[in-house]
Image 1 (spheres, rainbow, N blue to C red):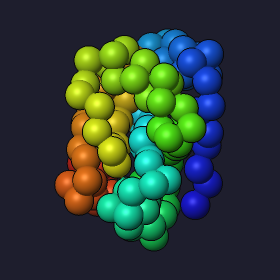
Image 2: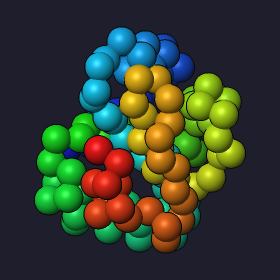
Image 3: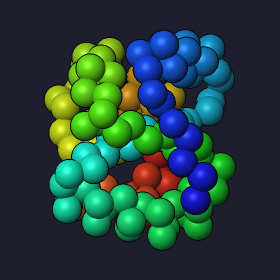
Image 4: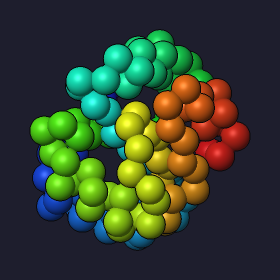
Length: 113
């Protein structure tokens, strides 16, 4: 599994702008709490199933303990309620899927691609 990093608001703004300018590319953002056992469990589930279910979808990870302001900015930009763990699919700069906790399912994501 190849996690891509979003470590700053500038990284986020660049990704959002790229998404707005992309025709059909979908990207995923996984907001992860390194202090939460549920988040760790869901992260492992995603790692074990993502490449098989969604091989062409890049997935970014945000450490929301370390980058709480960034996590809040993502929620604000996409008009979603902040949760952790949380998986958001982004297409053309808009969120098209948003799930949290045990509702995060790599196979379910495939139907939005």
